[in-house]
Image (tube, rainbow over the protein chains, first blue to last red):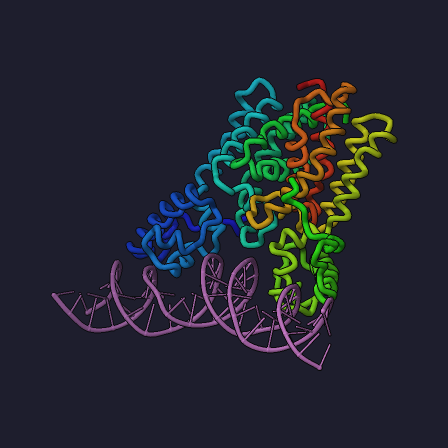
Length: 200
Length: 200
DNA sequence: GTAACATACGGAACAGTGTTCCGGTTCGCA
DNA sequence: TGCGAACCGGAACACTGTTCCGTATGTTAC
């Protein structure tokens, strides 16, 4: 769980606060990475991010030991927002199943707008294991809550684990950009229909 | 289309038949690649395949200009078999929808047993574009036939293109091994249920 | 203000991979 | 047997991730 505790800009409140230049560089790196990710996807070379930030590669690795840590840091806010919107949607929607659909829709939006994020977060790529885990640890519980509510309301009739559902959604989003013939949302809708169908 | 015509062991019947050593090496390479793919997945280093075959890397590239060509050659028979079984299943099954399900089940079997094939065939990996195209060119028409039949029989009520369905199935299979918590088939079943559900 | 120390920086260097290229070898044919 | 074409092997290049260490900088104590 807390293996996922990633350095956030404001946890240098220990005995030895970070040096000013270090804090500055971390912020610069986050901004540079965000720009590069938008332009070239989350798989962009580390060197490119270092150059964009005007620092050496060593500095990148010191702040973010793995590329996954960098990606997590860049998208942390959005993932948190997504996680927090779950209970909210559950309270406000007309039905739990609807809330689940809205929540998933939001998640798909997030994945779709991040060039290559789904590919890398869900595929077996070992170097992104931490990213994979972060997404799952943060979002599966939320998904579980929505899924349970929908099941208890009798709206979801098929047995499926929250983990599987999240994986499935993530997988379906792979390649959703740069191919007009493939629109993940249609399949995701069908999948959710299937979970609600009494056919079994 | 025929941009996918891949060198098969027996198309040197042109004016300049391949030399004996070349033919021998191609066969050796195919066998070696098959072994390495099973052991280390289809993403294994080219050097490893060359070593396993006892040839230089240059030889690998001469016979198979891209890694995708090698993968295609290794799995060609199975893909062909899958493609050919489509019409057969349609003839023999109780209903078109059932035939579609059986066909997809077979395809999933194929993907699941090939270590990392789904990852590489469906993800955006540029160097595997030919593999992606081969799968699609060969299987989408078959899928289309089954899908059309099922739709005309009124068993499939949701609008979806064969291309999208194949992509979706392939995507869902990603990461299906080495993770007991994720069983693609459950989601694929749900997806197909969704396509059949009148809910829309 | 400055000395001394810890911290952080930059980028060279190493390792693994894909891909190309070419000198040398082998095959097939006359 | 001799010769040209086809083929082979692996060195060499390009690109990427990752580590390491001499140097520079910020921070603190005096």
